[in-house]
Amino acid sequence: ALGLEIRHRKTKEAMQELDEMLQNYGLAAFASAHPSELSGGMRQRAALIRTLILKPDLLLLDEPFSALDYQTRLSVCDDIASIIRETKKTAILITHDLGVVATLCDKVVVMYGGLIMEDGTVEEIFSHPKHPYTMGLIDSIPRVAGGGKQRLKPIPGTPPNLIHPPKGCPFSTRCPYCMNVCMEEMPPYFQEDGHRTMCWLLHEEAPVNPEYVQRKEAMRRADG
View: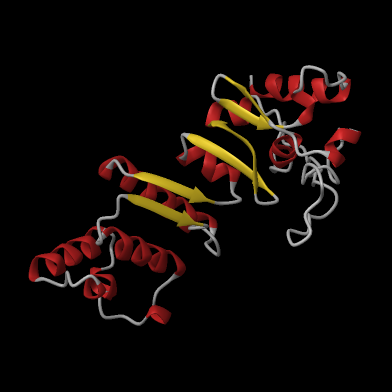
């Protein structure tokens, strides 16, 4: 109720609504509990209630599933999906969990080095990624194919120093398709039907990189 107090909305009606939300999210019996007495999932639900009671126009969810076990993560994910559907609010989800992104989101913005590398719909980003960093992220997702083990494909190298960023593309030092221009000039955005990508490989005068073309085609086929 702290947010209600700060905004001078701690009225009888507001407190009744708060009680109803605690009931709906299974926390009514813990209304007077100390945070240390709550599980991780309960704390996340309490944080959601604390936000929703203020009736925000926009929900900003920063790593809402961190430090949660698998089952609790699924439950909280269902809660958030229900909130977005029922309240019809816009939500911005900040996360490294691509599985959650594929489940909850309509549009995706892929960032690296503080810049947008690629953005588009979920289908475009997962089925037809164009930036090498996005491809690397998707490659790094654990998969089970035919019951056999598959070695993970991490992205080699380390992130750039944001205090002294590189001259060109921030991903150039880790990119397997890096060209000279990538290290010298920041690439512009290339757009195709709402799918926007910051990469010199998409420039009309860029030399064709067969490995890059093959990788895009392989990811397209893998998506079916």
